[in-house]
Each structure stands twice: as structure tokens, then as C-alpha cells.
Length: 88
Image 1 (cartoon, helix red, strand yellow):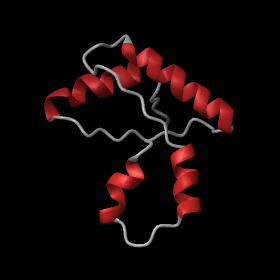
Image 2 (cartoon, helix red, strand yellow):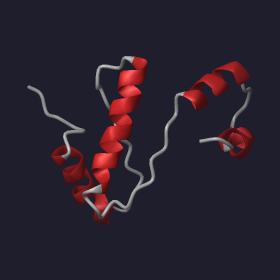
Image 3 (cartoon, one colour):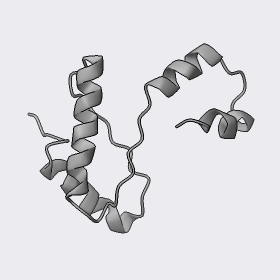
């Protein structure tokens, strides 16, 4: 996420640099091949580490900016690795 601020400045009005720095410090990016299910275990490890480090309860949101063609495979992979669990 480093460098995101520079690329985003033209779209943002007033920037509170302290808030932006905190957001940058708490933003994590994981690149993976969405067609390879084994790569989701690496994502799960990163998520687990971040949640453990910050004492987070595992309440997750996934934003999928992807082609519709990949959506089902991605959601199934997220579910099969235990990253997303149904409750209720």
C-alpha cells in the first residue's frame, strides 16, 4: 500500500496525514493467483497473523474486485480454507 497516498491525492480533498499514516500501517496486501486454491492457505496465514498481532476477533470483509468469471472460485476457496464461516 505504500505509495497509495501519492497516487490518490488528486481524488482526496483534505488529507489528515496522521490518519493516513495509521491507515497505511494497518493495511496489508496479499497478491495471489486466484485460480490456485493452495495459495489461499498463505492468505489465511497472513490474515491469522494480522488478527493475532492486533487482537482482532476474526470478523472479516472481503472485497472482490475481479471479473465475474472468477467470483465463484474465489468465494469457494475463501470458504474452503476457513477464512469465511457461516453462522446462524
